Length: 97
Image (cartoon, rainbow, N blue to C red; front, side, top):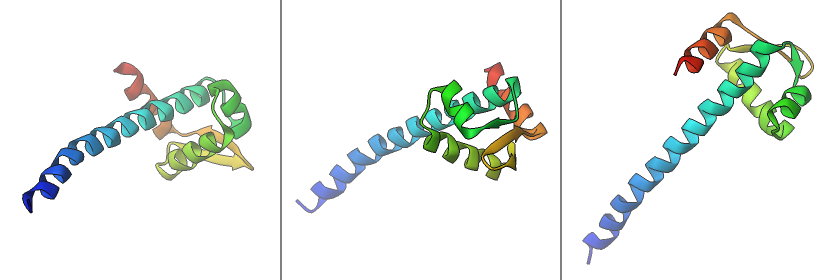
């Protein structure tokens, strides 16, 4: 009986791991989508990116914050972003696959 909860936990971990992997994959795809938009036409405002990507502006703002944190885009005004050389490189790497 004491082993049952541990076994249940072990069964849940792979599912949780798959969910994290899936979220990571979605996150990478969304990052690539935003980079693609900015490669094609930048600088753009968060609202413009959201409209092109058909995503909620808050989601786009969060993605832009993450991309900025990783040096792939840079803010050039209030809510206005431009792609960096690092972002262009990452976009190029992501579009090859």
